[in-house]
Amino acid sequence: MKETAKKLFTAYVGESQARNRYTFFSKVAKKEGYALVSNIFQETADQEKEHGSWFYKMLQGFKKEESFDEMKVLPDAEFPTTHGTTVDNLKSAIAGENMEWQTLYPDIAETAEKEGYPDIAKRVQAIIRAEKHHSERYGKLLKLVGDDAFFKRGKKIVWICMECGYEVEMDHLPEDFKCPSCDHPRSYYRKKCEDF
Image (cartoon, rainbow, N blue to C red; front, side):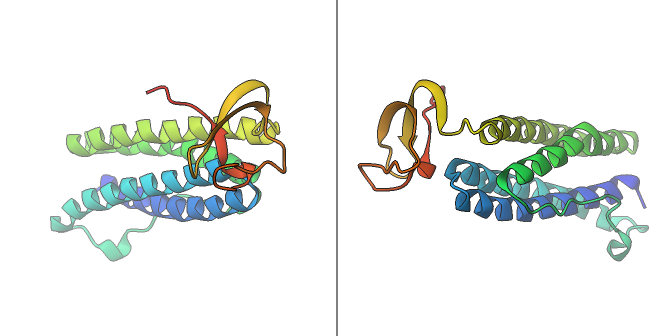
């Protein structure tokens, strides 16, 4: 069996479990009062589903090969089982994303290229860029959550309610802050950022 097929299956399994973990992490973040982090975990879970879908589609092309036995394709990787605080979960997510874009997926792309699958290599290279973005974004969130700077910026900024769009300019949002428009707590606020 081609190594590319085995590695695609490992990637498919990895993306599937990442999707589930990020869905779990989203619930933890929301419970801890980080609705934005919750939303980003959920958004990333949906993106991991898309990556998994592509790994699965690419794997289907190998079913025509005589040596392919889908029941013998087992993932050859370690998968994290972290389920802690938002800080723990962000650290775990960063480590997983880094492993994917720095090691696992470049290896898959290289193997696919060597075995004569340039289209697979090209698709995997594109997924690498997305995984790198996931890692960078989680790293930025970790700095805010870990340093308790999420709702305390030290200078006036515009905060926006993710539920109704109400805007307020303050240097920090008090713990008991509620949106005057929709009554949602401060956990539903994020820094206004609209650099399109």
